[in-house]
Amino acid sequence: MSSIKDFKCTYDNGVLEHSKIVEELGFTFPDVYLHADKMAALSKRQKEKQGNSICVLPFCHTVEGEAMGGIITLGNEVAGPRAKEYLYTDYKELGEINEIDFTKGRIQEVLQACQILHEQGEHVMLEVSGPITILNVLIDIKQIFKGMRKDFEFMKSVFQKVGTQILRYIKEAKKYGVDFISYADSAGGVNILGPKMAEQMVEGFTYDFLKEAQEYSDEHTLLMLCPKTTFALLGTEKAELADIDIPAGSTYGEGCIEVLGKAKIVGIQCAKNMGFLLKSGIMKEVVLK
Image (cartoon, one colour):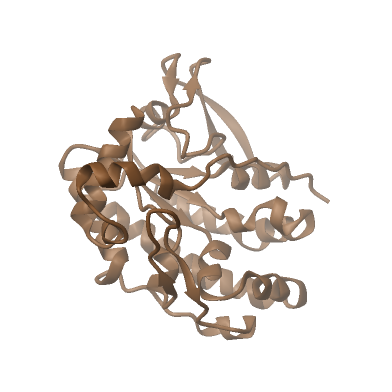
């Protein structure tokens, strides 16, 4: 069996981080989650406050699930958007999940916010969720794990359908000027799935999905992985790391900008930690085998 290391996520409640900035801007919750101009303003102000190089959108992990029919509550200044009630009760119902319409709803507002920032000359990162995180907006995560244990081939087909929607989202995001696509499936980490299921996930979905996703990386776009995903790929020997030289003392965000067009995937550092100093002057590219 493979040996997959875990990455301890230290990122906590982003809502509390945003609340003071929202107040300064004269916005309110949950209104700031609904309108492109407010999303863009919040993202830009947050970037400035943190001294980062890249604006980040959206502010939650429910956008794709909601666009696929999920029922969510938008939350407030204490707790952000989350599932209100589940659309499905049994994993077998996931065979008929909805496609995303990118022309309406909150997902369209997120894309419009990306375009606003791009037109203002900002570098923009879109956070995209993986299938387990997305499906958890639609169904109790216990049902997802039950399906993976009892009928992984069926769940594999479900993950692939969700993966198709994620790839469509990435393709759409490029039209709106997004420079960086951050891919994470935090609900599907080895600390939650366990070693056996985590390996199944890489073999049955993640590797093939990323093979397709990396084709959208070019001189304008870079794919950034959550370290949990990177370690899963390394642990199953589906990827290796390669060094790319950048100016010593660059932040992770600056390093990502520097390697645009030079790498297809990076992912040994958390995208939430844009200010992390790379004293060695080396970025790690994730090279799929």
